[in-house]
Amino acid sequence: MRILFMVQGEGRGHLTQAISLGQILRSAGHEIAAAMVGSSPGRNIPKFFDEQIMAPVFNVEAPNIIYNAQGGGMNVRKTIYTHVTSIPKYLKNLRKIHESVQKIQPDLIISFYETYGGLYNVLYRSKIPMVCIAHQYLLLHPRFVFPENSRFNQFLINLNSNSTSWLAAKKLALSFREIPSTNNIQVVPPLLRQEVTQLTPENGDFFLVYMTHHSLSQQIISWHQQHPEVRLNCFWDNPDVSDEFIVDETLTFHRINSEKYLHMLANCRALVTTAGFESVCEAMYLGKPVMMVPVPNHFEQECNAIDGVISGAGVMSKTFDLSVLLEYLPKHIDHSQKFRSWYQQGQKLFLHQIEALSAARKGYADFDKKAVILLKN
Image 1 (cartoon, rainbow, N blue to C red):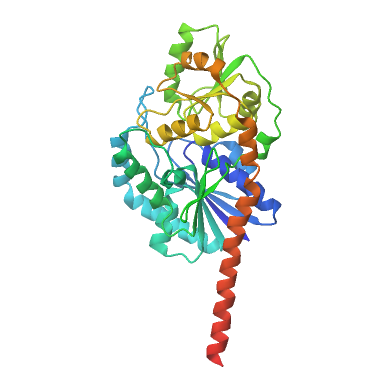
Image 2 (tube, rainbow, N blue to C red):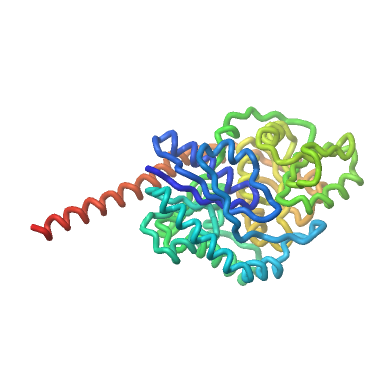
């Protein structure tokens, strides 16, 4: 099959999921024809994606989350206002996507929670089947556990998840743990890059911190000033500093770098992260305890953190108060063996879901041809 990827560029998770699935599909003889990545002004797509996706990459400006300054979290009002006022631009970008799809002529489109995916299906009524893959689709599952008193936020996030997958042939929900599938939601293991599975974990003397936006760094610096004896290595996306920004002997900020990050993840004592699904999965695979800190006003990350705690990943905190992690560590139970067993079912499940769709499409095409021949006769 000739396959086109559509990937949300917000954060790192969807990008690494696309890389991982690309590795699985190519090993089975399929071709990744191109990858369209939804990007936003002022945020560059990490170099590792261009290097590892092994296909032409096209960037398209897409709706994205807007953050408050100084670690204030997601600015809901500004995010909504910007999206509404940018509708003409988004429609123009959808036209460019359609033109690219017509040139590429894929047999299948796989969307990694890209906002344009569902809109493209609705506006252009494409006959090319689309498979939508994301952890967010697990929130549509009746067994998912939400934060208390969150019905309105549940409605909003599930509305967004449904809109990204309008008219999709399948929704594959990535999950920390095995949960029975439903008629509409196929539950599948996480997608991890092969580089993660090849690492040999060691128990180091530092905490590794990963944040989705550099505005959150002030909380880390404040805690560090009170606990300078704890060694911290932090990864951020700050474009205004050098690749390695050394604050002092025990605090260093690193620009996002795939190889460097994975090496430190394998050798850290524990991971502190803003509750992104992919980062937690990598830590679980390597047996690293996780402190999950949802970005303020980011309901999806609150859900990720609760689900991660239920799955045995670690502990949840509302702020980057690493004292919470220090208190939790003696209680942590390593669930890496159980997680790896679930993960190892992934390659077979993904190929089954995707190739079954291709076979069904071929079957329908053959049926249509036979019907035309019968009618002519």
